[in-house]
Image 1 (cartoon, helix red, strand yellow):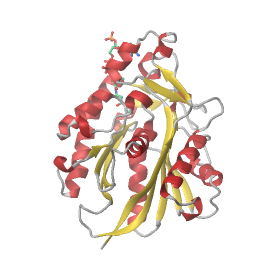
Image 2 (tube, rainbow, N blue to C red):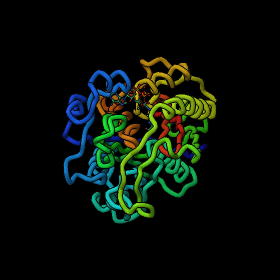
Image 3 (spheres, rainbow, N blue to C red):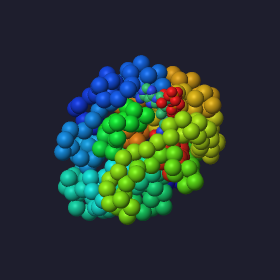
Length: 324
Ligand code: UT7
């Protein structure tokens, strides 16, 4: 028998304010047509003034707890993937812990930008498989609208706010690729590429939060190559093939990256969950948001094989294969 980290509940939260592409036509020299054709984005949600990353994370967490039919007291820990925390410290995790009324266990944040949810899933999986925890809440939550330069058309049209949450529980599996739960993981980073996507401020440099800066086109070319490699590695580690993949649930940065990666993996687009058109790029929140949407609308079913991949600032990238 093998200890597996098995999904038992999922949920998400998107702020009420929906911003269509046309909003940006008045801000910068852009068009709805350019944004749609280059990125696939049609609209995104922005948090309200005073609405914090921890607020979005807590709403998503409550939805996941309800979906799992458990309470916060049943959790051993919370891991939040975010690059847009409420404060420099404490972690968003501990704020969510208090909001949920959870007085035991642990909470912390993981920061791997758009790959953050993959990194958090790998961390949770390692803790569960090693016996350190039995039930973990893994959240991706971001308010990227707060680090946008509204005069930079090459970035401000691309990002959105939101949160998704997944609950993983230790269960015994047979040790085969037919087990439910996380079957394999693959993590990578290469700091030589850090200038491709970064925020130009921080505690020990400028003392400010800074604004997002991105070399979109070079990053685009890195993304398709690295995402298909990491997804292929995770898949190979399960012993399964692309024909066994029921759903790719990718990071949602750009529809052309999603299409290019699916093509390289030989998985038809009918087997890819796409939310980029409605959410934009929500960084660490994009995978749990897409997974939650796919589960809620009935596409992702118990027993389905899911392959998730993400890349972002660092560069940091990785993939997880899991059976729902
Ligand atoms: O989540 C983390 C990972 N993020 C990513 O993986 C994002 C990767 N990059 C991308 O998604 C794409 O590179 C973008 C959507 C950012 C840009 O698409 P692109 O096809 O790579 O366009 P480009 O950067 O090569 O720019 C093409 C043209 C340029 O004009 P010139 O130099 O050809 O005259 C840009 O100045 O489009 C211009 N442009 C815009 N035009 C209208 C850039 N942004 C805009 C805009 N509206 N918003």
